[in-house]
Amino acid sequence: MPTPDDPEELERRRDEIRDELTSVGDLRPGSLVGRYRRCGKPTCHCAAAEAAGHGPSWSLTRRVGGRTLTRIIPPSAVTRTQEQIAEYRRLRRLTGELVEVSERLCETHLPEPRAASAEAAKRGGSQRPSSGSSRPRSKPS
Image 1: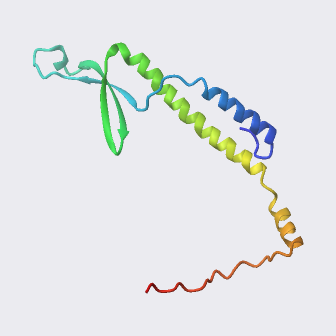
Image 2 (image 1 turned 135 degrees about the vertical axis):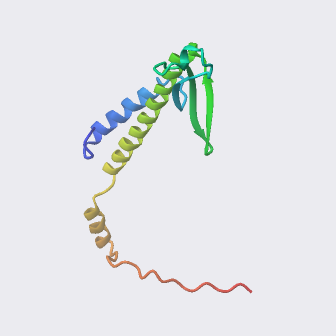
Image 3 (image 1 turned 120 degrees about the horizontal axis):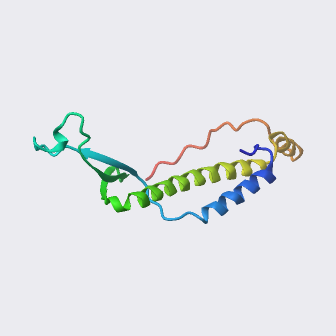
């Protein structure tokens, strides 16, 4: 990670992240889970104690508006769905890093606190905080 006081390095990393964002493919949020179940028939192979059960049956779950949505994913789409979830996580990581780098870059463009107070002193500004009191509001008629 670049140091906070190296604006050139921060700008270079910001530009790299922007370039990576242009290559983001299809994405989807959520978690993909393979479930195995027992059918309940006593003569089925899944009834044995060591049997894993039938499956896997794949489902994608995610939160939307405070509710959990579940979508069944056919076995033929599992690999593609895993790639889409990975791409979503990549997007989240890149945007988080972009915000962090950008914020650090913005900090490098701020004037030093002592320089700002020296400028205020030259202009005749006060170092005392304001009293915080204001005139009372008038009552509505």
